[in-house]
Each structure stands twice: as C-alpha cells, then as structure tokens.
Image: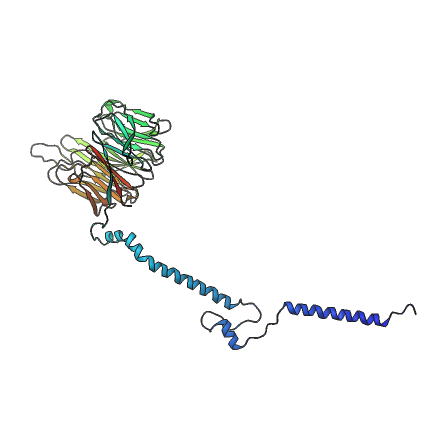
Length: 448
C-alpha cells in the first residue's frame, strides 16, 4: 500500500503543466499582434495612389518599410524647400540693389558709380609738405615725412594729434623720404639718401640702421617682405662701375642676406607682390648721350635671387639737340604699383616731351604685354601710384593736378579728386586713402 502513488496527485500535475503551456502561448500571442490582410481601400489610404512614388501593394512579410513614414518625410522636405525658395525670392530685390547695383553698372558700361568711391573724413595740418606716407597695419596711425624737416611724424589721425616724432640720421633733408611699416606693425623704416633708419613705433627707439657710402647713389625706395622677415631697398646708380643696386636685409640681425647687380638697368622705383615671390623695379637703361633714357620694368624672382625679365615700357627718350625733339618720357619712373589680383604692374613717369604722352602704362607681369594705359598733357608728372588690397582700385596722382580713382583693370574712371598730391598711401585693409597735398594731409574713406 505504501509504494503506490495517489491517483489525484498525477492528475493535478498534468493539469498544472497544461495550464502553464496555455499561459505561455497567450503571452506570445499578446506580444506579437496578428497581421491581417488589408482591404483594397485600406491599402490605398495607407500607401497612396499608385504612380506617385509609393509602392502599390504592401508586403506582408515585413521586408518593405512603412510607406506612410516615407511619404511624411518627403512631404516635410518639400515644404522646407518651398519655404527657402519663398524667403530667397523675398530678399532678392534687396540684395540686388545693395550688392549687385554697382557691379551690374560696371559690366554694362553704364558710366560712373551712383555712389561716391571716396569720401573725405579728416584733414591734418602739415607745415612743410608731405612726400612720404605710410599707414600702420590696422590703419590707426599714419606716418608722414617731409623733405624739408629731419623728423618723421606719427599721427593718430582720428584724434588729429601727433603721438610721436622720429629724428632721421641723414644729413641731406632736401630729398624724397619713402616710408614703410612692417606687416606686424613693430617696425617703421625711413629711406633718406645714404641712410635707412628703422624705429620701434611704440617706443620710439631706433632698432636698426643701414648706412650707404655717399658715392654709391643713395636709397631710392624700400619695402618690407609680406611676412616682415626682410627689408628690401634699391640704390640709385652713382657711378659707371658695375655694383649692386638691389638689397635684401634681415629684420632680425640687420645683416645683408643677398644683393643683386642690375647694370646697365638703373632702378628708381620698387613694388613687391603680395605673396612675396616677386619684386618689380621701375627704371631704365641710359645708353648714351645721344639716345637718352629707355624706360623699363625689371622683374626679380626673390626665391631664385635673379633678375629674370626686362619689359620695355615707353618709347626711347632723347635729349634736347639741334633738330631733335625730345621723344617719350625724359626722366626715370616716379611710381610703380603691383596688382595682386591679376599679377599686373602699373608704371607712371614724368614726361617733359612735346605734346601729349602716355604717362601711365599697365603690363601683365607674366607675359610682358601691355594691357592698359593713359595719356596726360605736356609736363605731366605721375608722383604716386597705388593699388588697393585685392586690386579693386588703382589710384593715380599727377594727371591734370588731380587724384584719379580707376577700377583695378584701368577700364573705368570712377572718381576725380581735385587736389594735387605728391604722395599717397592706402591702409592695408583698403578702407582709407591718405593724400599728401601741400601743407595738409587728407584722409578719405574708400567704398568697400
């Protein structure tokens, strides 16, 4: 009796197992909903009409994503694009009037710009005239020099006051005094006859000095390299013996890095390209007393330390003689400017010939071909030429005793300023123009 199992225990255990299996099946059925086939009308409501980029039937296997979600995303994208298009069309007239007006007028050759290119904003008094001007890198300060004084003045031109004076070491004060700021603004250089003085404009201390023997011709022009590591200057030809006329000095040690002999070419003006790979020298060749002076532009490769090209610019000039009228410009070039936008070089001269002369010419530095030019009346002297940064404007001083502002390609005269300027400077950002006129300095704001 004791070894037999109760019948009711076996029955209860089987019932318990059956209930557990049914419970598990119900739970699985609850988690996985039954997918019933959709009717045709329901399928069209969910899928949309056939032929509009959606599937015409729904796969019951679950391999195709729900088309309703795809349609919703595409609809939102289309609506976003429609909003952007509406905003663009709404703002287009404003942009066209503000930004494209002057450009369209220039392309269609409709004449001068409707707005003034330059507007006078300040006038600074100068007792002795100004032949040298240079803006600091940020345009806040303006350095000015005069051939009649031994000082270089540093103006805070917005406040109309001189903040510092620098005394030059040269003995001859009746000479042109080119000025140059280094790109970082920590150096100010002045070129005067046989000496070059370099100051710290913040402290007034002299940090470098270069002396040249008086018999060598003296300094004619100078410029800093774009990174400020070198000071480049040219020497006028003082004798007949071949000698160096182009110099590159280190701004850290003030030792000479390299020099270049250019004879028979005699340099008188200097312009350095924006990237610092090229330097253009304005000058010429003095062949003989009968032939006179041949105006030329010399291109120096600053990486190869070599003069690589001579561009013959103006017709050969001849000295006065019995039955020999003077032809072409009679003196070395007075001004030179490099256009960083299209790699062209503009050159201006002093013409004392008979009749009108072509006193400004623009050349392609790569090919040597002339691309533009301008004539002036008898006795025209081009005292200064400057391109604004990025080559938007070419500013000339000298024709008809005025200052002319042209477009960078020298195709359209944009504005004439009725003042005779012996020197001019453009701020490194191209926002301001300084004109050295007689006993005052004028500051003009350029249209950007």
